[in-house]
Length: 156
Image 1: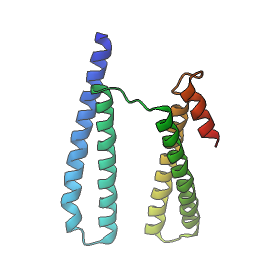
Image 2: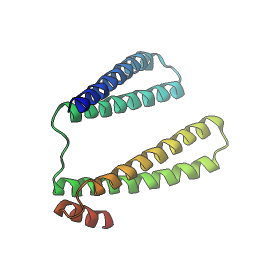
Image 3: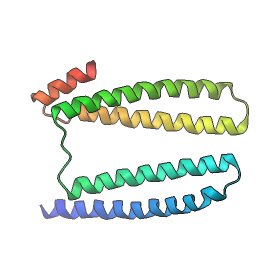
Image 4: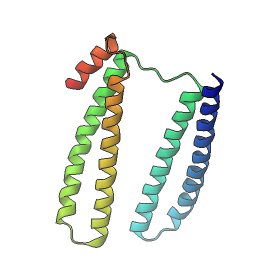
């Protein structure tokens, strides 16, 4: 049990350090956004701000899931969450398809770069969310009611 506690403390400390970095990034970017006269610079800075906020949020969830009660989902919550993830993934697949199509049509350097960034980000997010959804499906004991419900939800 001591080994688990030490490992948990190490993870929490690591996430706290990561959050401190993200906070500094957020502060620095937010200081520069109002100064940015160029729309490209402002847009990229805003995207960096959103990314840093997202990272901070996820790091906090990791800390909370270790410090507080572990994360639990009821079978109904799991089924609803799986449905929401599926809907999001379907929409993101469409967005990815349009971004790839636009990338292929674009010859201008800035739009082409931004489209390549968008495509890479959408692909990464889709891969991670698909992996997460698959892990949620197998997180329950295969003979449990929640696992049967999730399996049915995943095939719907």
